[in-house]
Length: 249
Image (cartoon, rainbow, N blue to C red; front, side):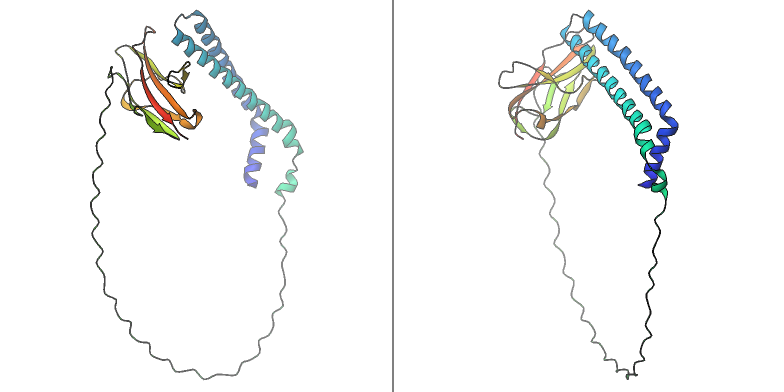
């Protein structure tokens, strides 16, 4: 633990300027990304593209805040915490106290005749019992395939009316001839009035594989719909596919 503290102190004192430079570079990159995303959001006419640009703006703004926080923490450690540390007291070894224990001279014990060893009985071998043969595990039944109106836009897990809890991964297919990206949204209730995006959009098509991880603990208990939307390069999209599930955490 002491070596770790000394290493961090030395790192902050020697490389504080490099920390500032790295933070400034990342801030400039994210400022440029924010300006570009804001320009795209203002100029686009498609709702999906506007939502993507707004998401990029938020991510760039969050990165700028993180870099400013790192710079503030590094400044506090360099100019306030490190000067207040007494490195001499930290690195000075603790003296070891040696205890002197008086050794008493043993009193001679009269010799006792050695007893005659008694022969031990020979152990009886225990017969080996044959272990029963393990029965073969029955094969796992193959799940019935899910039927989707469009096989290129399909959620195979979870299934309709399935009860979910904890961390899951939505699986299925999301592809298109002129694929640009896909997203998954959730809405609460039998007829959701609002849809909310789950994580970020995905720009890689998926065929019979994992689409997106979901932590159902963050969703309300009860009926929830998952909706998969695939967007092409023109900003248009075929009819989305939705599946009804029950959240029970």
